[in-house]
Image (tube, rainbow, N blue to C red; front, side, top):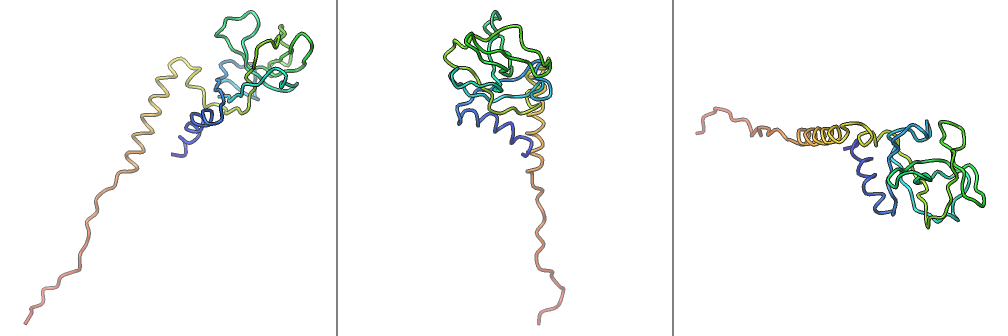
Amino acid sequence: MLILTPVVLLVLLPAVLGLERHVITDRSMGGSMGRGSVLLAREVPPTDLAVGDVITFSPPGAGSDEQVTRRIVAIGDDGATTRADATGHADPWTVPLTEPSYARVWLAVPWIGYPFVMDGGWVMLAAAALAAFVLAVIAGRRVPQRVAGPARTRLSVG
């Protein structure tokens, strides 16, 4: 049960707090938010962004489905300069900050997103869930015990 608590929180907490979930699929953020980390992010207007914030966005010129997570290192009139923590160098693009909102990272939970970034990860996740269910059933099963009554003696009555 203790193992499933973080997973349940990652499913329920975002819904209650109005957060989005993202999974880091590359190694660009290094040790701060490694591959397989689940990010909980809140949509904020570009005016609320500051240097040091970590945001998830579609890089300029990328496909609409491609998302990256980067740290803002500078904000200017033309947009935000971002950097991947693992490289230590500014990205080759400037994020224009013209969208109505951006996903600013609120919390990162390491490793729990690995099933989503590995080949066959869904199968591994389903197998782990099945194993947890079987263990819960086995642990909850009660073996009937014989109830011992008062001991009888063979004394004659009368």
